[in-house]
Length: 259
Length: 274
Image (tube, rainbow over all chains, first blue to last red; front, side, top):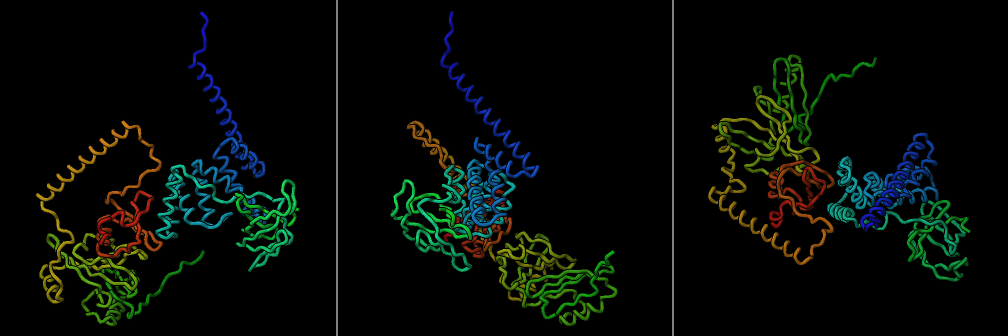
């Protein structure tokens, strides 16, 4: 008698294939992690970063944390636009690892928010992330007690509420704005950096930090010239300016050599 | 090899002394000094070469030759006479500028005092730590029943203070426990009925976030006030401080083994309604 595969056998086969794919992915990410550790122990940071990135791409939270940690270290040792870009990317990876319940990543985010590394200082958010870290790993509890003494009672309650939301899976959109390099509609003609007030000349208009103005876009592929863009300035460095265009999620990193 | 540094003398300004205690044990003099600004100092000396200096210092403090201790009135916030089973204790609470003292009442002996300095004649006790929201020193001396009566009379002290909370009689306690049990059973039955009804309607939702319920007011708690953490203290002490108005409304608390801070109103909802 000829046997026909039953539905159970069919789904069993699918499950087996899925398990194998998942296992191979997990194995792959584990091997990238091992490679990363190996490179790191030899002091080959660029190679380690590459390996960790591969692990992170296959969904490995420890890989994402390792990339974030390395970029954070590298960014803090840099200056100018390199620093801003590294720190921004680092916070993105740490956020990814933290939302996958990685305690050290939560603690690193808290540290960045406490000290204003790559992001504006925000002790309430810092406490919320540190509370998560302590929830997953009790060794962070003493840090939590240290931080709480820097908060006002209302802030503590607010931070705890935020932590509760994070724990139930309602994560914030991001910890810091993502940054894209350059924008063909915008061109910096000049930068003046001084202790008191820095300014840029953007599309012919003068713009200082915290200010918002309408600029007329320059001609670029896909965008006609003459479009009115409400632009606000976040930060001005010696070789860059960080600006936001209203209605667009990421910040634009503009340098004098953008065009 | 580096020679070890060694102090060759200690000088104390008698103008700043609030209380001064000494005790001689064999050939050793033990000294405890409480300063008017709340500072303390304790050290030991060789008796044979320091007795004259000690008597000289006593004279500057206007102490009798036979006395081994003095407490100046200016540092005394109050005294509490406590009758134990066989002995009486005199608690002398020392005030410190800028420090909040625990509530002075008949429960003073139940506070978690720590020994700061001990001698045969007196114990120096400390409550809390410097910088805590409530911190003070007290001198505890054992006195006779007769002395206690005499001192209370001479000082025209308030007598026989009532306990803060009257204890319920046994009969009343049984009635209270019975009522509580009936309420508890009713609550459980009601919850079970409500849950089964909801399940029958198919409308049970998975909880999105855990509901924050007030912890029962038992155990020990840390306090957070003006950016400082103090404790842990038994809830009884916190209740006592709170009912005495010694805890500011913005004080926060958390159970010893938790990281969740809450306002005092969560711990004592009825007391803060005062």
